[in-house]
Figure: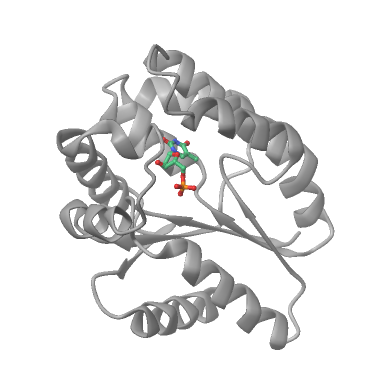
Amino acid sequence: MGYFISFEGPEGSGKSTVIKEVYDYLTQEGYDVIMTREPGGIRIAEEIRNLILNPDHQEMDDRTEALLYAASRRQHVVEKIQPALKANKIVLCDRFIDSSLAYQGYGRDIGIDEVYQINTFAIENCMPNLTLFFDVHPEIGMERIGQRGFKDRLEQAGDTFHERVYEAYHQLWQENPQRIQRIDAEVSLEEVIASSIKKIKEYI
Ligand code: TMP
């Protein structure tokens, strides 16, 4: 069986840049690695991603949103993640179940346990072996993405929502100290990349 690593954190944590650097590093070191993202990673899940993040879909109900994330995750696990793990690959995934727990469970106030339940239905036992939590305060993170211009529907959700997501990540980290490792993401990108690689090397 391969090794499953998820990259998690609030908006603007830099994790999407870091994951590419980690992928290049591990590939150069001779590891068999794939890089993917959620929601997305495969055709059906990318279509669900567009549906969820479209800023025109303001009427989307919170539970519909949670179910769509779980549905896209199910397809992603079955079609891409499980086969890669069975082929002994290292899977690097930009966001996974903890995003749903933090954003829908706590941010949208559906309840972490409820969202965990629909997600265990979706993924069965396919949990990450290791999760890197990129810790950046939402004020800094939102300022970083603000410089980008366009904001998707989730990014538009407001400061209170993003504060709640941040709190939830801290709670998840404290409750899962084995699986979730915190990376300080308020420092320079070079430092974040270096500490991510160091952490991963301790585990694989
Ligand atoms: P991204 O910007 O990191 O690509 O993620 C897309 C957005 O979707 C981001 O705002 C976080 C959000 N999201 C959830 O709310 N729940 C989830 O389960 C996932 C995977 C992402």
